[in-house]
Image (tube, rainbow, N blue to C red; front, side):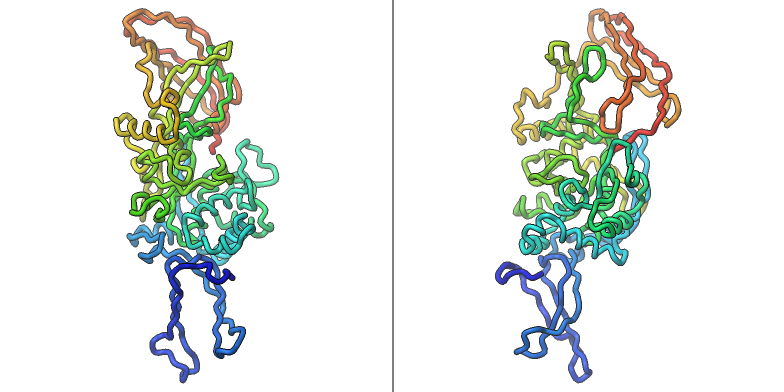
Length: 491
């Protein structure tokens, strides 16, 4: 790597003559052992046969990768079956859809195709940190925390010479729709072929699957994970705020949103930077989809899954963001004509459903939600949430960790038919008066089409009706059939 003398303070490389090898046979075999914390990458090997020679004879190149079979390596994975799944397997599944209708698509990771390792190393070499200080970057490549963070930034092209350009508006001129891709190899080869210019276009499952290929190629165990009802919290307050006017539409655009699903990667490694013991070792969430900047760069993680489960959101990297993705509270506000607002309700259970990944050794779906959070509705889950709120220094009055009491009138919308693209859907609105007094209601039903990112796009139906609800009485209001004319798009 051409590092200056004295830069490394690690274990030494070792070389010895292979047992049974000798010069009388006309050749000699050398056993070379690298330290477990040596930087990954391509090394040049040479040998001097004369102590006075200034230049040695070249022996060729050596590619050094992380080694999950080595107990001293930071990515050591104890179980062989898991190593075969999370490092060696070249095909897998990516889960998509919605919490009630989970589908899967096959993906070819192809990490052992002949040219992929060269492309992955090229990706590391053109990252901004390497371009600004090559020696420092090369030296840091011994650390999977650093490498996974660099790869997270380099899979997207938002602020570097990254692999993929994202697009979510449905307009894919000059490129391919994200649904075109079913493997990483074509994406990575296109990036290299066109001089490191971004491949058009990707969305979350493409970003994550390509990152999985790169990490497995470099020897870091990893898997693709899908979170359904995934929150995007832009202001780090661990809530998703929705604003409605008193006539049912959204007059105020909130930067927060909830996506039908979002896909990221979990990578396996130790976290000695966070704990002297192994408290935060294991799976780390890393997300290459460009959502929010982390220390000035569009990347995310590695965030320890164990820290997310415990609400330890004050740890590196980007734990508050991932915590909110799986466990934010949804807060609904009523906005009045004078600009004032009133909190209408808080939903603490909807975000973060059926977090899924492929099973080891089979094509079954495994639900790993319990790795990220305690069961919704339990005291433990609320205690962790409230602890997380305190750790991000949000005043308790604004945290929504303590919820309002049961509303006088409750409502919910129930599906009578399954949503199918191009088909009508029937819904019903169920109203309940929980009070001991009669309620006279003005019901404003406003139906809007919503894009994949939670932003309304067009009006479908409006209806105004007065209704009287007796004490502890329930009523059902039927919607006319609503047509679903185009498939939903996803992050």
